[in-house]
Image 1 (spheres, helix red, strand yellow):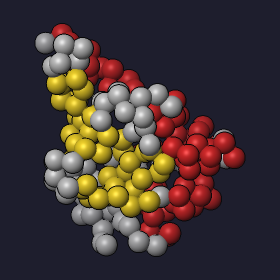
Image 2 (image 1 turned 180 degrees about the horizontal axis):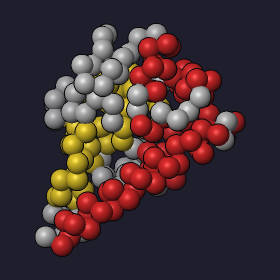
Image 3 (image 1 turned 120 degrees about the horizontal axis):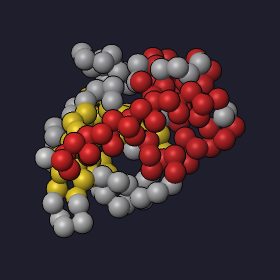
Length: 160
């Protein structure tokens, strides 16, 4: 595989994966040592256009880092209305909330085109954080920022 033009995300050897993780905002503050630990646990997954990466209310299997392609995040409300939350592409990540708290998925994510992801399973991600708590400290500000942005988006949609 090669390099995505937009983000520089790569797949291939461990060094490529480390460099890819470094370019993702969630991991940008982590040390080389911690990036290497996470990179060793990444698994490549490919999704075809229209295929779901995750579905709302399913168990969270992991954190997805988009290597190439594009996904749409949607949330279905209690009355069955589907709300478009965001669109993400190379270098973006999804699934961090479920991975961190073990709760069900809060939204669905569908591939808008063929999409390649690096997957960090919940088990691998949490196991690595348990033995290296500085990883959690490093990603916490990014997770909080993402939560605030999502909350603001949902609040503004409810005002419309």
